[in-house]
Image 1 (cartoon, rainbow, N blue to C red):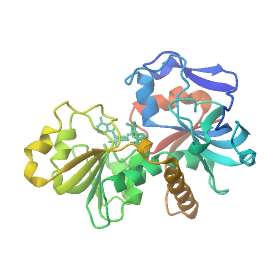
Image 2 (image 1 turned 30 degrees about the vertical axis):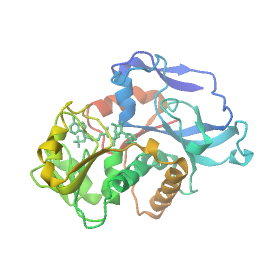
Image 3 (image 1 turned 180 degrees about the vertical axis):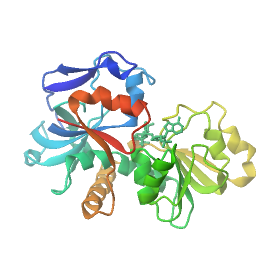
Image 4 (image 1 turned 45 degrees about the vertical axis):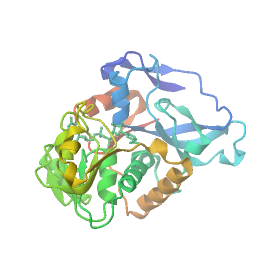
Length: 309
Ligand SMILES: NC(=O)c1ccc[n+]([C@@H]2O[C@H](COP(=O)([O-])OP(=O)(O)OC[C@H]3O[C@@H](n4cnc5c(N)ncnc54)[C@H](OP(=O)(O)O)[C@@H]3O)[C@@H](O)[C@H]2O)c1
């Protein structure tokens, strides 16, 4: 099969197109003939080598949509021929065929395209469960920091009342307004306080955002696209002790697979109905994965880039 491999961590040029043997579905796994592959912010973090610990030759990417063509031992053979979304774990997705655990597979409604599935299949449940994790409820004010990526866009759409966003340009802000944002802020985030902040950015400015929580406000970190925060970032909370603010992290890993799949299926159906929008920045062939990463590194992506096979 055709695949993209990280020959050298660092620049996008370190990713090369290679021929690889087809993966084999082991017990509890399915083999998916890939139609569409989601290109996420975390793929770029891994490719840059920021996280370390990954072997040279890694096939990047973690989510695909396509058709199940084989199953491993213990998996019901009726899955063969079904169109699915699948999480492949860290790596393995930028390829013509990919394997996934059956628990990480969600069937697609017939009317949902594979491109739309990989645009919301990973990000949608993150947005849903992260908001639940910090007890977000209708009527509370919400700030989404780093809203122009796939997780932020889903969060804005799931918000039930006023939602402020940070973004880097007026044009991106207009696009976020069209998706439901009621206040558009630059990356500094303005001065207002919020009941809930969903933060995808992290980085050196995280303490400033902890100071923009209202009394009993909660900030949840779901990503670190701007890098890790300073080691003493928690001091912002301790100094404002009398305001009862809370800092939380959230990872989808802590949500049982059945719950993730149930929410993902509902979001897929909502997308087919037109109640949710899958925002696709670009669709490129698999061979142009390096170009997809260049566009991510240039900061020009709004929503998701998708690779097709
Ligand atoms: N918690 C989980 O379970 C989970 C699951 C999957 C992924 N993740 C994490 O989520 C992150 C990727 O999410 P994503 O794909 O939605 O994000 P993304 O598209 O990579 O970035 C979101 C937005 O953040 C803004 N941004 C980027 N760098 C910034 C900086 N230095 N300062 C301020 N704003 C900046 C950009 O928008 P503007 O240019 O418009 O400002 C960008 O569009 C990764 O950290 C990944 O590890 C978490």
